Image (cartoon, rainbow over all chains, first blue to last red; front, side, top):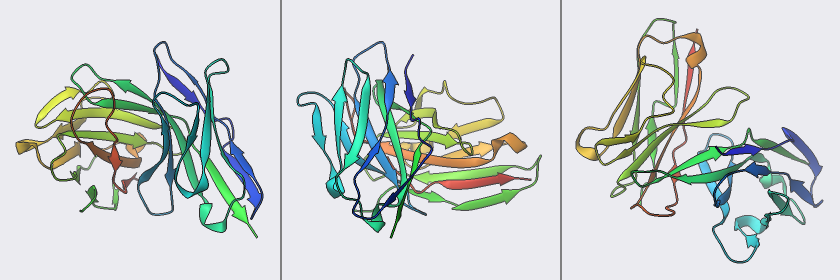
Length: 116
Length: 115
């Protein structure tokens, strides 16, 4: 069974400050890992993904995440946040389904609030 | 290219009533998924279609939920009769092809409130 833990339900941060959103996962098989972002009144948008290769993954809007297999973590970081980064962020792992396709298992989400 | 669309965006119904949610995937995407987020909880997988066939419906909560995808295009998710615990946001996603990984594109969701 797979699971994802996002310990921080809310993270307040001042504009231009760095931020880290934490994600830990458990899985009995090799994983694909993702971060999605949901802006107000919008759908989930893929921020970045780790499939294989380099453990440091860069995504859109200046975000990056590092896959750490020994610590089973996939923390999301941004060196300097902007007001427009205010959104809810979801970490997810991927399970390949028998009939093809992929099933995503999500964490409970982290609400990032950027303040002036 | 149009993204995944869902209708309605919001629905407020009384306990015991029926509600039907609709999802239009990206054109050409064979895979269609339904997920649900109950308030404060994680987004949970409900089921997966490949074209018109249900491949995995292990996440469907109970037999009050019925999903269909006639013709392999749009999908509907019917809740009958609705209960209070069905309140939440229902997301639809679609992806192209099969294999190890295919990016899922999500719709904006339908917020369902059962009173």
